[in-house]
Length: 155
Image: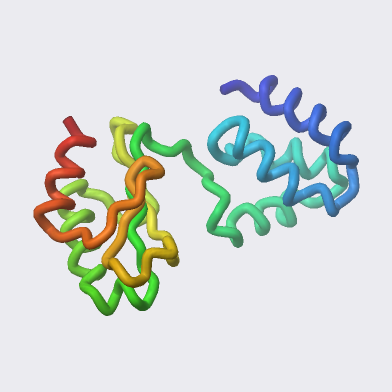
């Protein structure tokens, strides 16, 4: 994407949402929906459109975990870190995933193929540990299943 694309999107959203400070979160969500993440180049454009400081916009983007500052990989692996999944062995699953993918939580592979993220409850507490792989829930995930699924994603 180019700065011109970002500027046009921010201007369009400011027109649709208004240029009040209260439009910040809806604008950030809309920009992330459109571009997949909040590029650092967007921050001064948003700040100007909403009469905020760059620090204000940056602070909101970095405070909320839902906002991504880098593009997602083509595949997204989200591992549940909620208490019930932790009680059922999620830490071991996370360790295997980080080793197998060579990523820390929140990172995307250099080739852009896979993003590894944490999620704090998928609502499948009775069947943990759980994961969400490309928006498909996977329950009772064990090392063998995880290895097979990650192998399919990295081929």
